[in-house]
Image (tube, rainbow, N blue to C red; front, side, top):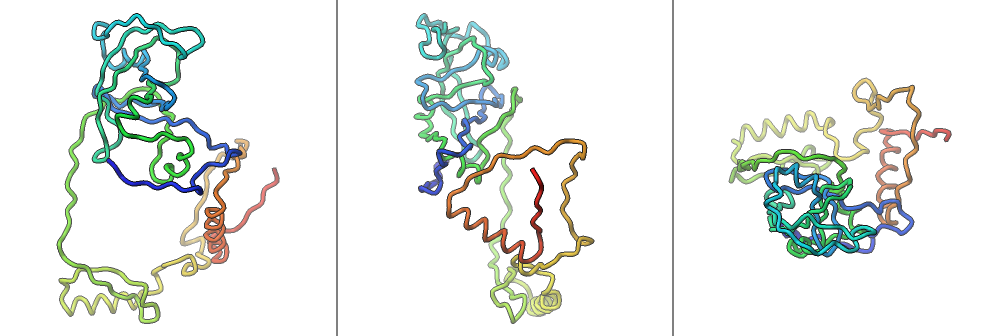
Length: 269
């Protein structure tokens, strides 16, 4: 659960960026996968909307009645239907954690099913910062916009079969000793030599970089976007990256252009 992730200045989203999205995720509670859960580190309570409360097959008699209204949730004070404590699982096994969450149940219109505030974030020892979304997206999608609930049952994870056999490296060709494939060390001498001979014979079919695949014939492989010609194209918003990442993107695209794997196309806007 506790994997070290380090953020630096290059991970920050510029103030002029359009990437300031809300953190919306999914959790598991009452044997349901609840989507559209809003993470609000400015909230001092955890909120469960009444419509979601009923969809979870919970009953009003399970609520602990309170008289204190909810101040600051909306313009006028909001009357609470009650409080209820539910076990909530965040994350995906094996990197998940289950904590008890004391929800305030409210009847109010909302596009979300729950709001998880500071109490749950503190219990999870989690950090919710919108400036981290750009980095987290590259590792795991956090922002989801799917409604409703889904039944959930725990699934047993099958153990991955692995061998204790050591691996050895076989070079593809003598001209490029750094390009190797790995195979088991228990191969017989005859089999290993036959494999080395086979790799050397077909060395040209192995591609280790974009330079190894210049001008791939369209008859062999081609990528197309099957779009409806009757639909008007929509211009996407420009995405901003840190200067270091821009250099990496330019380098990668430059190599693909040089190898003629992709071509620059200009459209009038």
